[in-house]
Each structure stands twice: as C-alpha cells, then as structure tokens.
Image (cartoon, rainbow, N blue to C red):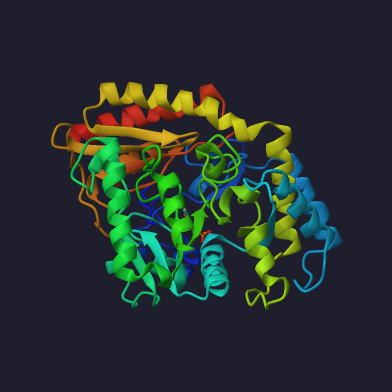
Length: 448
Ligand SMILES: Cc1ncc(COP(=O)(O)O)c(C=O)c1O
C-alpha cells in the first residue's frame, strides 16, 4: 500500500501523536485530522467535522462503521472468551468455518487457516503451497500489492526498488494484462490476453514450471491500479496451473466478502483457485482478522503430514467473532449482491465525471471496487503524475487535501484514485462523494 496522506485544517500536532510512527508517511509532513468516532458511511474528527468514507477505510470497512450487530457480537464475545490457544477446538472458530463453507467457490468445500491480517495470510499461503508441492518458486504480478511483511512485500510487484531488503528467495515476477496501459503493446483486449498468456508461458519455461509452487494474484488488482483483467485471462492462467501442477492462489484480501458483487471475485469471475487469502472486509475491519481458505483436496494433504504454520493470534476468538458476525450480516442483508447495484451507480457517476474532466483518462472497476486514472492528455495517456513518486506528488496531495477539506476521505496510488464505498452506502451519500470529487478535480485542474 502507498497512501497519499494529505494536509487538513489541523494546524498543530499534539505531542502524544508525535510518538507514533505513522505507516507509509514522511513523518514531519503529517497533519491528518484526529478521528474520534464513526457511524455508517461517515467518521468524525474531534472538532465534530464529518468525513464521508469513500474508500471504506483501506477498502475494508464494507459494512460501514459501527454496525450494531457486529459491535454487539464482539462485546458479548469479549465477556465470554477473547483468546484460547489455536491447538484447542473452539465453537466460534468452528461456526465461522462452517459458514464460510456455505460461500465456498469449491463444491468439495474448504478448510480455514486463521491469521490476523492480509500480509500474514499471504505469507502463510506461500508456506502452505511450498509444503504441499515441495517446490520453492512463487510467481506474482509486477503490478500487485500483497502486504507489508518481509514475505508479502517480496511478493508485491510495485515499488520493490524502494525496499532495500533483498526479495524472498524464490519470488519471481511476471507482467499481467493492463488494457489501458498495455505492457504487451496493444489496445485490443483479446490480443492483450493472448500475449500475456504467451509471456507467462515463457516465464514458466525459463523458471522451470516444475519448480513453481504457486501463482499468487489479485483477481482484480487493488491499490496498484484497480485493473480488471480481460475476459478469459484468469481462466487461462488456471489452465496453465493445472497443466504444470502449480497451485493458483487468489489474494482476495480486497476483492473478497462482497467487494466485487459476489462473495469472492472467484465467484463473480467464475474461476476457482486452490487457495484464497482473505482479511479486510471479512470482519469489516472491526477486528484484525485474516486467513487462508484452502480447498478441501489441498487441505487434506495435511491429514497425515505436519501443518507447520501458525501464530499466537491465529484464530484469535475475538477477531473471529467479529468475522462471524460480519458474515451473518453480509448474508442477512444481501450485501454480497449489493455491489452489483453500486457498480451501476459508480459507472454512471464516475462516467459523468469523466465526461466533465479531461484529466480523467479511464474509469474502471467491478462491483464496488472502482478507480479513476488521471492523465495529462487523454490521447497520449501520459500519466498525470509519474509512478514511483515516493511520498506523493504535489497535484495529488492538493487533490486529496481538497477532498478532505470538503469532508470526503479517499486515497489512491500515484495517478489512480480509489473509489470503493461501503456496501451499505446510500445513493445520496455516494452522490456527496461524486460532488466532492467533481469539485476537487476542478481545483486540481485549475492548478495544472
Ligand atoms: C490485495 C491486498 N493484499 C494484501 C494486503 C495486505 O493486507 P494487510 O494490510 O491486512 O496486511 C492488502 C492491503 O491493502 C491488499 O489490498
């Protein structure tokens, strides 16, 4: 992740806040508002100013803030049991696993490995793939984000150059389709898919497909560009994996739990991987919950072999209780399908902004996971700000600052702005977001 953190009206930073190292930020430049509470699609600062959460926090608070049923379940669980060693059975962990099975993309069912967040889940998925296949290499996309641990940042495709640590041995990158800015020199999605698959075949051939444990991908890329792959691409990656005995892992940390208008992107796109990592929306970020969903035929490998993966907080009961309550709410309130309705609103609203603002080169997304890509020139598609600009660029900081001034929170990466509202947002609330984007784009264009 990389955030464009923005100045706010707060002028002085109280000393206690200076004792915190704020992630992904140049510390001395920070003037964020001080947030004290939240409700529904909004959070509030200590002066009572209201902010529309247009990105569901870090694309995670999908139920909006403070859903009473989830809050109550966490409170009740805290009184009963917060933690017990992962080596014991526990009713909450089992009930959640059973309910996850009802939304499984695999007819054979799944088993759950619990972790506390996305990066940890991806690290563990890699370990599982290596244990199962006894192979070492892991292929990931150049344009990807998989998390901030040493393992997950090795798997991450963007900005590796910024991390001074040598990558995890065995991590190998490949290019994936990006129809708007093709790495395969074409503007034809079919040709893009064919060439991307040919490229992947060559990477497999040069790396030795027999050495590759897994291909790990976001089925729709998240903070590294919100790229929706052309039809058929993921299906063909699946076929290549089957051909070579390689496990396909979907990083569903952002796309899972309704974000794409279905329980998982795998469901929406009709491509079943072998494992899916999850976090973020699983508990709507009310509790730090993540994990790996492993299809039964892969999980059963460990019935007579050591499952040598785990953490003190794996299956933390309070965290899982948050996930269980959130999943019940997603199902009861039909929120997995809600993304389809929001998709239409986003297409219409962001499409209208694109007509009004030449700086918007592309509007793309699926479900409630959209992005707008900003350009200097719509014909040449020259990015508005260069990629790999550590700390954020002047125009984008001005843009996010203006949004915040108008009471709207959003973030993005370089020239791509993420628009991923809570699945509970109303049409009127979303319109507030469009109006603020409209105004902030006008201000930014005036300064270019
Ligand atoms: C697709 C994807 N994978 C992994 C992660 C890492 O998750 P976490 O920040 O919970 O470690 C993120 C977080 O932004 C993500 O978007």
